[in-house]
Length: 147
Image (cartoon, rainbow, N blue to C red):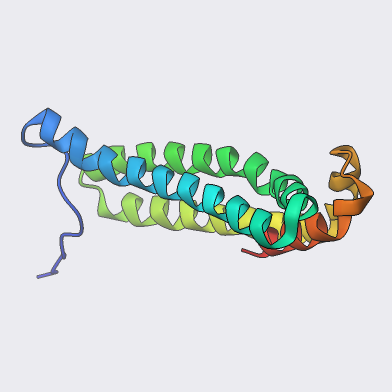
């Protein structure tokens, strides 16, 4: 007899509004925290590094700002498929789907890391990064690509 441990909540049963709010709340909170982080980041940089540092951070973050929607789209698409397979109670396909999604997202992360390190100068050129802020933008772009 195999034992299956239930992880998470079953969103297929129960009151829809309550389940929808429970599902959406962490995503909304995550987006708010991300926006707060970006705002505080620019305030701190502005206080300690001035205008040039602010321009560097703003320009250097463009690569991550560009890639985040792609990662979110793939994650959302994968989660929809995973939800369908979970709803069908097909454990084998569920494990395969989760593994495939995690592998895809990790591969995308590595691609952004490598691409950021190889193409950062070209990206900053395309963004017309001012020469005065080039060092700060490069540092910030490399740090965020590594993250």
